[in-house]
Image (spheres, rainbow, N blue to C red):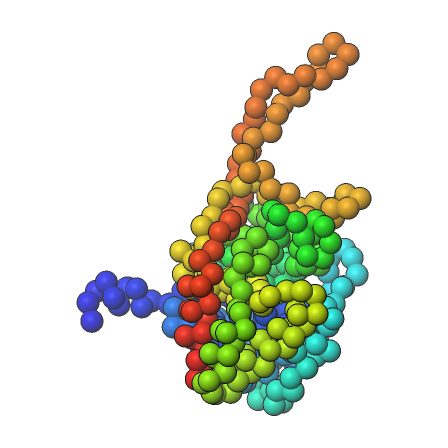
Length: 333
Ligand SMILES: [Ca+2]
C-alpha cells in the first residue's frame, strides 16, 4: 500500500446526533457501513419520535448492524423552548416504518448525549465531524455547557434548513422547526458548518427502480432498508411524490464525500419569531446588508455592509452518484 492510499484510508471520526426516524435509520446504516467513517457515537434527540422511542430505535439499529462497539446515548427529552412535535405520521408509529426489528442486544451508554459529545470532542480535538440529523437540541446543549467545543470540532454537517421553502409549512424545514432556539445557537457558534437542507435532500431521491435493484440482494440491513424504502415509496405516492428523498442519508453522504454537493458560503440566521416563518433558515446569498442611517425625516441607504458567512449551504447535488454510493454500501449487508 502506498503512503497516499493509506492516508486516504484514514476514516473520518463522526458523531451522529439523530432522532430515528426512517431516513435517520438509513443514514445510520450507511455510516456504519462506510469505511470512510469511524462512528464514535450516536446521540439521540427527540424529534421524529420521542426521546425514549428514539433511543430504542438507535439501539436496534446498531444491533442490526452488529455494532455494539458504537456508544449510543440518550440526550435531551424535549426542545429548549417549545413543545416537542413528533412525526409518526411520516415515519410509522414506531418511527421505523412499522418494521419490528429484533430487540436490541446493545445496551445504552449511560452518559448524557451532550456530555458524551463534549467528552469525545476533547478526546479527539480537531478530528470530530458532528452530523446532526434531527433537531439541534443536543448540540446546542453541548455548546452551552462547553463553548470551547466550537473551536475543537473539525466540522458540522447539518441536515436541516432550506433556502427554497419549507416542508413543515411554507417557510420551515422540520429539524429547524423542531427547535429553532437550538438551531440559532448552533448556527451562531462560529464553527465550520455545511448545511445540507431540503434544497438538495429533495433532489437526492431513491427511485422505485433503485429500490427494486437493492431488493435483488439480501442481508439483514439490506432487507430492512428495502422495507423502509418501500414504506416511504407507498407513503409518498399518496402525496404525489415520485421518489424517496434521502435527507439524513445525504448528510452522511456529504461527510463521506463532500464532492457530492456544491456549496455556497452564506450568512444563515434562524427566524425565532415571524408570523409565518418561525424556524426558517434565512440565508443571505449576497452576504451584504444595506446600512440605513437617519437623514432628515427618514432613513436612507448610506453603504453596503458585508456580513460574514457562517455556513456553506449545499445548493446542488450529484444525486445519482449519491444513490449509487448508498446502494453500494448497503448491498448484501
Ligand atoms: Ca432525522
